[in-house]
Image (cartoon, rainbow, N blue to C red):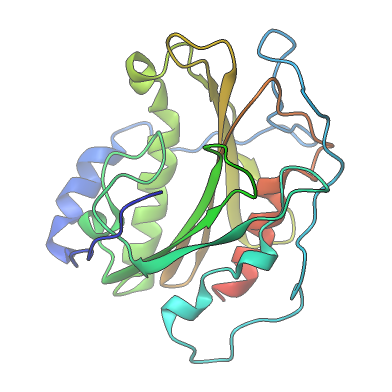
Length: 244
């Protein structure tokens, strides 16, 4: 579980955004039809999940003018890791300063967000699998767009974190068709001293002055889903609609 602490609004920290972005900000786009699936040399499935879907409320959306915190996805809209998997309610509150995701270099408040909230989702078993969403409001569309570029640069530079994640593999950014500015990617590694692989699917969506970040962490032998039917693809599509 991620600890939730009050996020500082730090418009003056756009200098950090510039420092994080660097000259390699241009995002990598996956070729048409390519999905970031695990290679045959990573790990093997303990159970090959069927195409996961949200469990309820798929057509519900926040009313116009709804508070930012109400635009976080309800638990029922987060796809499970397989057909029998149903996330449980976690915690909701202001996003803290803890880094969100393996590739992150700063919290959203430090790179321009005026306010940000976080919601966590607990697994239905006693595993350490987890999911979470952060949603942030920026002072204007230009600031949000610059932060969007910074987030993509973190992906491009993520291999620098390999020392903390042995064998870290960073898959390509994949655009989500029909969802505006929405992209996701998959990370995989094997923690030191363990035989089971670890996966982090990370998504991000931009709409005007708002950005949503999504994360699904799980252990397993493989990450094998039909292209476009990955749990993160479903979660990101729902989040992109909810932040609008």
